[in-house]
Length: 173
Image (cartoon, rainbow, N blue to C red; front, side, top):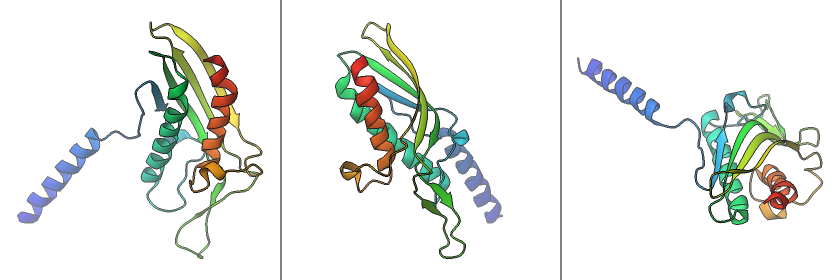
């Protein structure tokens, strides 16, 4: 009887927690980043560990990075919404064939980072100031210095986003 009660409690609390928890992080504020249908992204595969935790880490890290990069560029009252529709991390996850219990991410020039997203900048009065769609890739990612982000596993993606902000977004704002 006790087992049945514990089982019922575990099932009830587990399903209630799953319904309340957001599936993917969405950064809000002046810079809002929305990860649209992330299960369909080209490559956000974990080499080891729990896939959902890895995706959560990737989305939270890149979202916060975009916020820190873009917020200082916005005028008082301006907001930007970025909706990411595809992401392909640098490298490719390959099986280790018994060398380790986990797969490994191989980073080579033939696997560049790519991201597709749309963005909309609104002025303080709510009018649309800038709208755009981007499909960016950093084909030379492995030949440029990553000194600024050398200890970050997403250094290539962060530098690619920094380049987009400097080259495309900054002149529009």
